[in-house]
Length: 289
Image (cartoon, rainbow, N blue to C red; front, top):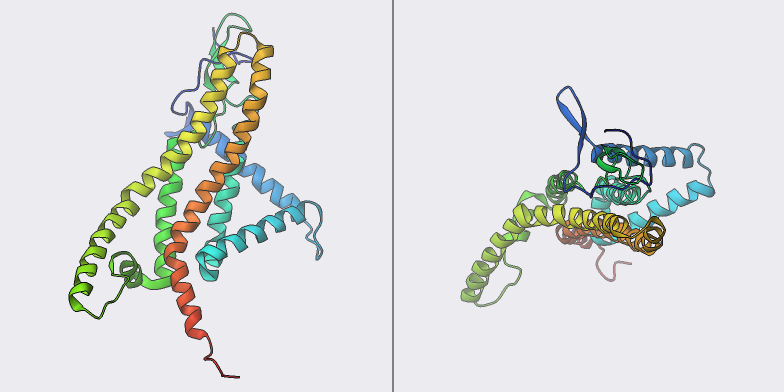
C-alpha cells in the first residue's frame, strides 16, 4: 500500500543519500535539491521584502539585513583584506546565509517525515521517499561548495598577489640568512613543505570541506530520527526531541559559521599578506608633514 504520510507518521530511518523524486529531461531531481531551492527562495523573498523600500535610517527587516551585511563585511575584511572582501563578499556572505538557512530548514517538522512509503495504518506507516531532506545532508551539495571555493580561492589569490606571488607564498622560503648554505637548506625545506601544502589544497582540503559539513548535518538528522523512532510513544518522543532540537539549532549555526570562517581564513592567509604589503608601500615616510 502506498500513500502520503502524515506529519506524525513513523519513518523508516534516514538514508545515507538523498532520494530521487522525479526527472526532468534525464536530469534527476532529489529531495535535497528541493530543500535547497526552497531555502534559496526563502532568502530571496526575505531580502526583497526587507529592501523593497530602503530608508536612509533603516528600521525593521532592513535594519537586520544591513546589520548582517556590515557585520560580515567587517569580519571578512579583517581577515582577507579590503580588496578581497569587496571581490568575494557575495560568496562569503552568501555562503554563510545559505548554509545556515539550509540547516534550519532541515530542522522543520515534516522534513524527512512526509512522503511516499508503506504501511496499513496511521501509526505503522514508514516513509521510503520523503519529499524533503536537509540539503547539506547530501555529500554532492557539500562537494559542490568545496569545488566552487577552490576555483574562487585560486582566482582571488591570483587577482590579489599574482600567479607568481601565489606560487612563491606556497613554495618559497619565508626566511633569509646571511649564510648561503642556510638559505639553500631552508629553501629546500620550504619547497618540500610547499608540496605538502599543495597536496592539501588540491585533495585534503576539498575532502575535509565536503565531509565535515555533510557528516555533522547528516549525523544530526540521524540523531533526531533515531530519538523519534526508538521512543516508546509519541509523547516521550516529543519530550526527548525538544532539547535535541535546541542542540541541533546550535549545531546548525556552528557548522555554517565554521564552513564560512574556514573559507575566509584559507583565503586571507594569502590575500591579506599581499593587501598589507600593498598598503605599506603607499604609506608616507615619517616626517613627511
